Length: 362
Ligand SMILES: Cc1cc2nc3c(=O)[nH]c(=O)nc-3n(C[C@H](O)[C@H](O)[C@H](O)COP(=O)(O)OP(=O)(O)OC[C@H]3O[C@@H](n4cnc5c(N)ncnc54)[C@H](O)[C@@H]3O)c2cc1C
Image 1 (tube, rainbow, N blue to C red):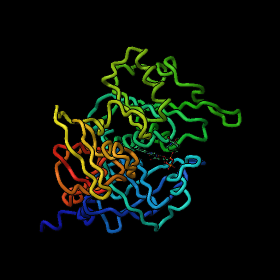
Image 2 (image 1 turned 135 degrees about the horizontal axis):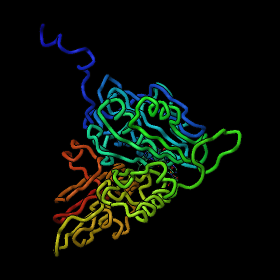
Image 3 (image 1 turned 90 degrees about the horizontal axis):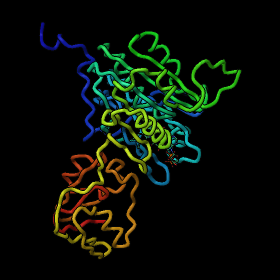
Image 4 (image 1 turned 60 degrees about the vertical axis):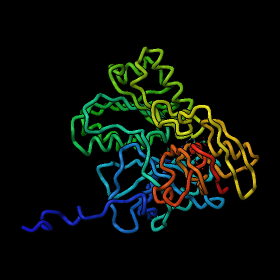
C-alpha cells in the first residue's frame, strides 16, 4: 500500500489559511427562530477550517461602503469543512439586517479569522456550566456540539435564557443532544410564556434559587457566560452573592462597548513603557502630536483633531487599518490584521502604541 492509499480523499483538503484565504461562499440558510438565521458557508475552493469552539470570524458587509461585524462560529469544531454563523436580526441594525435580507446560497463574502479566546478545551473532563441568553448561545452551542461530536467524557450543565419559548435558539437540537448524552444537563428559562405554548420549563428571571435547581453543584464548575450586558452583569452578581470563586468565571461580550472580563485580553491596554514621550506625525494632514507612554496612535490622531474610521477599538474589526510610514509600534491586535499586511507596514491604530517617534498615513 502506498502512502497515498492510506488517506481518504477528504483528508487531502488543504487547511484554510487566514493569511491567504479570505472569501466564504454561502451554501445554505436556515431559519432558526422568527428573527434568527443560521448561515452555512464553505470556502470557494475546498478548505478545512481549523478553529476552537467559541471563536468568531469578522465579516466585511457591503453596508454604507463597508461595515465589519463579528459572528461566533456556531458549528462544531469537529466538522471542519464548513463555517456556520447564527445571527439575530437586531431592530435597525445595519449588519444583521443586511445578512438576513441579502445573504443567500451562492453569495460570496470577505472574512477574517477565525480568532478569539473564549473557548474551552473540549477534550478535558472538567465540569462546566454554560449560561447564555439570546444570541449569546452561539459560542456555547459550538462548544456543546464539539464535545458531543468528540465523544470524549464531559460533564456539562447548560442553562439558556430567552424571552419566550419561540425565542429559544437550537431548542430541538439541544433537547436531542441531551437525550443522547447523559452528561449534558439542559435547562431552558424564559421570561414569559402563554398557555398556548404548553411550556413546562422555567419562567421568570434567572435567580440563585433557580440556578441551584438547574445546576446543584454549580460551585464546583467552570462557568462560561454569554449574553446581553445586563444579563451577564446579573449572572456575575448572582454568582458573587453565592460565594462562587470568580476565577472560575469567564464571559464573552458581543458588544464592543462592554467588558469581556476574564476572556479576551484588553487589547487597548498600554504596554509597560515608562517616562519617555514620542512624536506621532500624520504627514497627510501635517499634524504632529507628542504622546505619553501607553497612548495609542488612535488617541494621538484624536488629540490632533483627526477623525479616523474606527469601529471595535479592540484590534478585531480592521476598520482602522493604516500605513506605518516610519518608526516602531507595539500592536496588541485581536486578529483584525493579517501577517502579510503587517509585513507590508500596516497597523491597526486602535491597538498600536508608539515605541519610537512614528509617522502614520491617515
Ligand atoms: C466577538 C463577537 C461575536 C459575536 N457573535 C454574534 C453571534 O454569534 N450572533 C449574533 O447575532 N451576533 C453576534 N455578535 C454581534 C454582531 O457582531 C453585531 O453586533 C450584531 O449582528 C448587530 O449588528 P448590527 O449592525 O445589525 O447592529 P448594530 O448597529 O451593531 O447594533 C444595534 C444595537 O443592537 C445591540 N446588539 C448588537 N448585537 C446584538 C445581538 N446579537 N442581540 C441583541 N442586541 C444586539 C447593540 O448593542 C446596539 O445597541 C458578535 C459580536 C462580537 C463582538
